[in-house]
Length: 234
Image 1 (cartoon, helix red, strand yellow):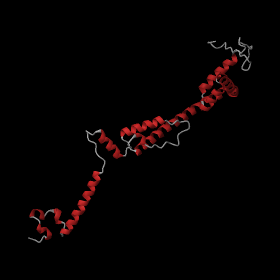
Image 2: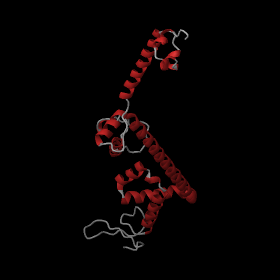
Image 3: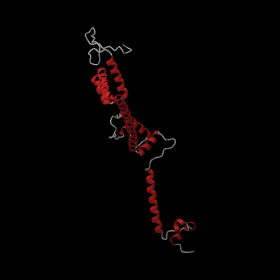
Image 4: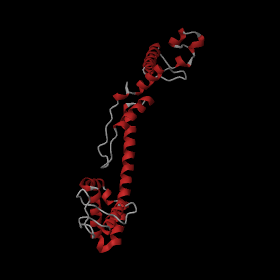
């Protein structure tokens, strides 16, 4: 029998095993064993610290541990959201929506990073839709007002005065300010409505002679009385 070195000390069934034939010295085999065992121990340690798996019969405690391992905060109020700083002008920010996101995210087991990413995506989409809607309304409003200008031509300044008189008389300064601040003052439908009101006013009888002809009338209390004979309800 050939000299197999240190393997000659092994039983015949182990002597030619491929696990040993690659080592000329027993020390080489020992070093390889220790290295392999160390790697296995390290791997086992990583597995022990890995995220637990949820079985079909997982309890609430199992799920809580699973979500915690994924990075979910302990409670929903622990989420820290970064509010968008580039929201379109006029778009409101809802604290209720933010709270709702936190509640849903915690129930779904989302991590802080996942929650922020989802919230950012939602706000970006909402802002885009708000901006697109505002631009569409502005375009429609501009087109409507331009059509009114073309319709009345040189008489457009008088058209505007008639609208202003009606707004001032029935709404006052506070309402006029609201119309200007909200942009409703440039809404063609509203402008036409107040023009028709102003036009009807000028065709009826007014007490002070400012807005049309007719005799001045005074009520029993001594105050001026307005008459609108063209109005079906008067």
